[in-house]
Length: 470
Ligand code: UDP
Image (tube, rainbow, N blue to C red):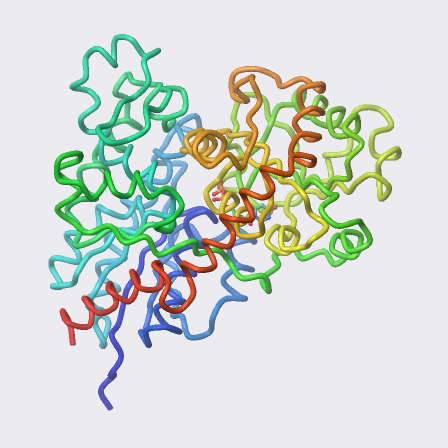
């Protein structure tokens, strides 16, 4: 019998931050729009990725593309973006042969940010092609504008000036993505600009945000007079797509049991995402800051790494018991179970943030973490480390005002214990900030519910795909 469902192929870049929203988008296409979905994933061998995939919707077809030998292709000191791009590029021949061999050929290819080089494959098989930006509208604006930046001589010469994109809030250079402040037109910048050129070659851009988060930026993205090239393709905010609560990698019931014994909104959760690390000196200051704040905490800790803030990106989930030796003397015995919990390597973040006992989140500002915080009404301390995290921090702290930021840039200096103590107290006590984030939570729920803006956006995309291939 012929398959009567539209078939979407999706390509996810390495990293939990990409894979999680791609899986969620796939699930929504299945459950709300009756699609068949095949997700191709790259670099799928970490234990965390495996657990995530094990617990995912059985109706999703997952195809793990063969692993490529990345050490042979990149320098260990290369930026994380370079590594991801190399992984993706090497996987394209496998993607092509898999699609070519499919009996029920997909009619659309949805790639995330680092997958735009797969567009010629979509063209070859007469498929529609969409980009799913797993980040926010600020990031999309910067990505699309990046090919233009090297023409702005005065910006290049004087990096102290904010980046002024027509129609957008000026952004400090140091808060743009990592590739910009480098500005020596190295490999990262080159790859990022290429992506900026390729995104508008799609049939549409899906983005993990919603209309009411920052309406003026979305409006500018759609305005012919602002960014001429992007406005040729529609922008569909379909988010916030966050992982549902039932999934728990390395789930540790003790954490949740402890959490449930604490008063409402009394615990600060501290985590630097799936790949972030801090230095040994910073770890000691953070331990002191938490203890001095006298607030309860859950802190997900990895062994410190001096000088490489994305050190765990590809090794996420690997266990280590070397952590204990890095804390100040007596910290663990003074705080354990009473003031807080230290959790090695990985915690069930989504489940933790959904608990009413959590009242704050010290986060590296990965976009998934930011959305998980917002959708649970939890205010943040923004502690960005790499990639587009500083941009997210600026959006959260300055535009949405649901986060505080340290005065010291976390990648340039050490944030001292007193400042940490003060920030922790601030977010736990600031009622106005808490109200603002709860309002955002409500607007996110509305956008995703039936008839809401994000629901309708994805319905439009689904309709286009059905018209094209069915
Ligand atoms: N995460 C988790 N437990 C951890 C660390 C991270 O469950 O200990 C999840 C987190 O909930 C989020 C994802 O991993 O869904 C991280 O994505 P994000 O975009 O925040 O940052 P990235 O890790 O990509 O830098």
